[in-house]
Image (cartoon, rainbow, N blue to C red; front, side):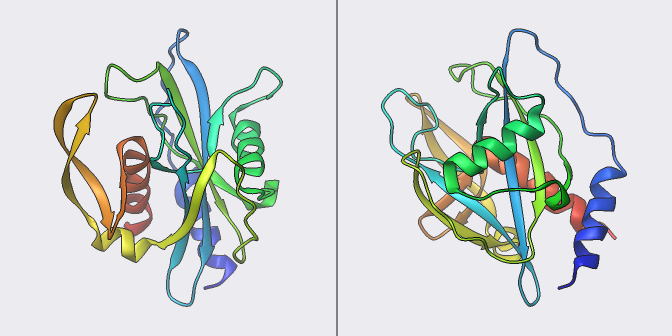
Length: 191
Protein backbone atom coordinates (compact mmCIF):
# COMPACT_ATOMS: atom_id res chain seq x y z
CA UNK A 1 0.00 0.00 0.00
CA UNK A 2 1.42 3.36 -0.92
CA UNK A 3 1.08 6.87 0.41
CA UNK A 4 -1.45 7.47 -2.37
CA UNK A 5 -3.94 5.42 -0.34
CA UNK A 6 -3.50 7.76 2.62
CA UNK A 7 -3.90 10.67 0.20
CA UNK A 8 -7.18 9.12 -0.99
CA UNK A 9 -8.41 8.68 2.58
CA UNK A 10 -7.30 12.20 3.52
CA UNK A 11 -9.27 13.54 0.53
CA UNK A 12 -12.39 11.57 1.56
CA UNK A 13 -12.16 12.81 5.13
CA UNK A 14 -11.60 16.43 4.16
CA UNK A 15 -14.32 16.43 1.47
CA UNK A 16 -17.03 16.13 4.11
CA UNK A 17 -18.07 18.42 6.93
CA UNK A 18 -17.99 16.50 10.21
CA UNK A 19 -21.02 16.79 12.48
CA UNK A 20 -20.21 18.86 15.54
CA UNK A 21 -21.93 18.69 18.92
CA UNK A 22 -21.94 21.94 20.87
CA UNK A 23 -22.73 21.31 24.53
CA UNK A 24 -21.26 23.96 26.84
CA UNK A 25 -21.92 21.73 29.86
CA UNK A 26 -20.05 18.71 28.46
CA UNK A 27 -16.38 17.95 28.86
CA UNK A 28 -14.40 17.72 25.62
CA UNK A 29 -12.23 14.77 24.64
CA UNK A 30 -10.36 13.53 21.59
CA UNK A 31 -9.19 10.14 20.36
CA UNK A 32 -6.73 9.05 17.69
CA UNK A 33 -7.64 6.46 15.06
CA UNK A 34 -4.13 5.42 13.96
CA UNK A 35 -3.83 3.51 10.68
CA UNK A 36 -0.86 1.69 9.16
CA UNK A 37 -0.68 -0.06 5.78
CA UNK A 38 -0.23 -3.81 5.41
CA UNK A 39 0.30 -5.69 2.17
CA UNK A 40 -3.40 -5.59 1.26
CA UNK A 41 -5.22 -3.67 3.99
CA UNK A 42 -4.98 -1.12 6.76
CA UNK A 43 -4.54 -1.89 10.44
CA UNK A 44 -5.94 0.27 13.24
CA UNK A 45 -4.56 0.56 16.75
CA UNK A 46 -6.85 -0.29 19.67
CA UNK A 47 -6.14 -0.26 23.38
CA UNK A 48 -7.80 -2.08 26.25
CA UNK A 49 -8.20 0.41 29.05
CA UNK A 50 -6.79 -0.60 32.40
CA UNK A 51 -9.22 -1.70 35.11
CA UNK A 52 -9.73 1.35 37.33
CA UNK A 53 -12.37 1.58 40.03
CA UNK A 54 -14.92 4.29 39.23
CA UNK A 55 -13.97 4.57 35.53
CA UNK A 56 -17.10 3.80 33.48
CA UNK A 57 -14.94 2.72 30.52
CA UNK A 58 -12.63 0.56 32.65
CA UNK A 59 -11.44 -2.51 30.74
CA UNK A 60 -13.12 -1.48 27.49
CA UNK A 61 -11.54 -1.56 24.05
CA UNK A 62 -10.89 2.01 22.92
CA UNK A 63 -8.81 4.30 20.78
CA UNK A 64 -5.96 6.19 22.45
CA UNK A 65 -7.21 9.53 23.77
CA UNK A 66 -8.75 11.38 26.63
CA UNK A 67 -10.06 14.63 28.00
CA UNK A 68 -8.92 18.03 26.83
CA UNK A 69 -6.60 19.83 29.25
CA UNK A 70 -6.78 23.57 29.84
CA UNK A 71 -3.42 23.99 28.06
CA UNK A 72 -4.54 22.17 24.88
CA UNK A 73 -5.05 24.76 22.13
CA UNK A 74 -7.49 22.46 20.32
CA UNK A 75 -8.72 18.87 20.22
CA UNK A 76 -6.05 17.83 17.71
CA UNK A 77 -3.48 18.72 20.38
CA UNK A 78 -5.50 16.68 22.89
CA UNK A 79 -5.52 13.63 20.60
CA UNK A 80 -1.77 13.77 19.96
CA UNK A 81 -0.86 14.50 23.60
CA UNK A 82 -3.07 11.71 24.94
CA UNK A 83 -1.73 9.23 22.37
CA UNK A 84 1.85 9.96 23.36
CA UNK A 85 0.96 9.68 27.06
CA UNK A 86 -1.00 6.42 26.69
CA UNK A 87 1.01 4.45 24.12
CA UNK A 88 4.20 6.44 23.53
CA UNK A 89 3.44 7.22 19.87
CA UNK A 90 4.35 10.71 18.66
CA UNK A 91 1.92 11.88 15.98
CA UNK A 92 3.15 14.67 13.70
CA UNK A 93 1.15 17.08 11.53
CA UNK A 94 2.02 15.15 8.36
CA UNK A 95 0.37 12.03 9.85
CA UNK A 96 -3.00 13.80 10.27
CA UNK A 97 -5.62 12.69 7.72
CA UNK A 98 -8.77 14.36 9.05
CA UNK A 99 -11.52 14.47 11.65
CA UNK A 100 -14.67 12.41 12.09
CA UNK A 101 -18.05 13.34 13.57
CA UNK A 102 -18.32 14.21 17.26
CA UNK A 103 -19.88 11.58 19.53
CA UNK A 104 -21.48 11.52 22.96
CA UNK A 105 -22.38 8.50 25.11
CA UNK A 106 -25.91 7.14 24.61
CA UNK A 107 -26.15 5.73 28.11
CA UNK A 108 -27.45 8.32 30.60
CA UNK A 109 -25.30 7.09 33.53
CA UNK A 110 -22.08 7.91 31.64
CA UNK A 111 -20.35 11.28 32.06
CA UNK A 112 -21.49 14.16 29.88
CA UNK A 113 -18.70 14.33 27.31
CA UNK A 114 -18.20 15.11 23.61
CA UNK A 115 -15.54 13.01 21.88
CA UNK A 116 -13.89 14.11 18.61
CA UNK A 117 -12.02 11.39 16.66
CA UNK A 118 -8.89 12.30 14.66
CA UNK A 119 -7.51 9.99 11.96
CA UNK A 120 -3.78 9.51 11.43
CA UNK A 121 -1.80 7.48 8.90
CA UNK A 122 1.67 6.12 9.69
CA UNK A 123 4.00 4.40 7.22
CA UNK A 124 4.71 1.51 9.60
CA UNK A 125 3.89 0.15 13.02
CA UNK A 126 5.42 2.32 15.70
CA UNK A 127 6.95 0.93 18.86
CA UNK A 128 4.31 1.05 21.58
CA UNK A 129 5.10 1.99 25.16
CA UNK A 130 1.79 1.56 26.99
CA UNK A 131 1.28 3.59 30.15
CA UNK A 132 -0.42 2.27 33.28
CA UNK A 133 -3.73 3.54 31.80
CA UNK A 134 -3.47 0.83 29.13
CA UNK A 135 -3.85 -2.88 29.92
CA UNK A 136 -2.95 -3.96 26.37
CA UNK A 137 -2.78 -2.76 22.78
CA UNK A 138 -3.49 -4.55 19.52
CA UNK A 139 -3.69 -3.89 15.80
CA UNK A 140 -6.77 -5.06 13.90
CA UNK A 141 -7.15 -4.92 10.13
CA UNK A 142 -10.15 -3.17 8.65
CA UNK A 143 -11.03 -6.48 6.96
CA UNK A 144 -11.13 -8.21 10.35
CA UNK A 145 -13.40 -5.48 11.65
CA UNK A 146 -15.74 -5.64 8.64
CA UNK A 147 -16.08 -9.42 9.00
CA UNK A 148 -16.56 -9.26 12.77
CA UNK A 149 -19.44 -6.78 12.79
CA UNK A 150 -22.61 -7.95 14.49
CA UNK A 151 -24.69 -7.73 17.64
CA UNK A 152 -24.09 -8.99 21.15
CA UNK A 153 -25.59 -8.60 24.61
CA UNK A 154 -24.08 -6.39 27.29
CA UNK A 155 -24.84 -5.68 30.91
CA UNK A 156 -24.67 -1.91 31.33
CA UNK A 157 -25.17 -0.70 34.90
CA UNK A 158 -27.36 -3.72 35.65
CA UNK A 159 -29.44 -3.41 32.48
CA UNK A 160 -29.21 -6.00 29.68
CA UNK A 161 -28.74 -4.36 26.28
CA UNK A 162 -28.20 -5.68 22.77
CA UNK A 163 -25.69 -3.54 20.85
CA UNK A 164 -23.75 -3.48 17.60
CA UNK A 165 -20.12 -4.50 18.08
CA UNK A 166 -17.00 -5.82 16.41
CA UNK A 167 -16.50 -9.29 17.92
CA UNK A 168 -13.08 -10.85 17.30
CA UNK A 169 -12.59 -13.79 19.65
CA UNK A 170 -12.44 -12.41 23.19
CA UNK A 171 -12.01 -8.86 21.84
CA UNK A 172 -15.25 -6.89 21.67
CA UNK A 173 -15.23 -3.32 20.38
CA UNK A 174 -18.52 -1.61 21.21
CA UNK A 175 -20.05 1.60 22.52
CA UNK A 176 -18.44 4.89 21.52
CA UNK A 177 -15.52 3.13 19.83
CA UNK A 178 -17.84 1.02 17.64
CA UNK A 179 -19.81 4.15 16.79
CA UNK A 180 -16.59 5.85 15.65
CA UNK A 181 -15.15 2.92 13.68
CA UNK A 182 -18.25 1.78 11.77
CA UNK A 183 -18.94 5.11 9.98
CA UNK A 184 -15.21 5.48 9.24
CA UNK A 185 -15.12 2.07 7.54
CA UNK A 186 -18.35 2.92 5.64
CA UNK A 187 -16.81 6.20 4.48
CA UNK A 188 -13.57 4.75 3.18
CA UNK A 189 -15.36 1.82 1.55
CA UNK A 190 -17.31 4.23 -0.67
CA UNK A 191 -15.89 4.41 -4.21
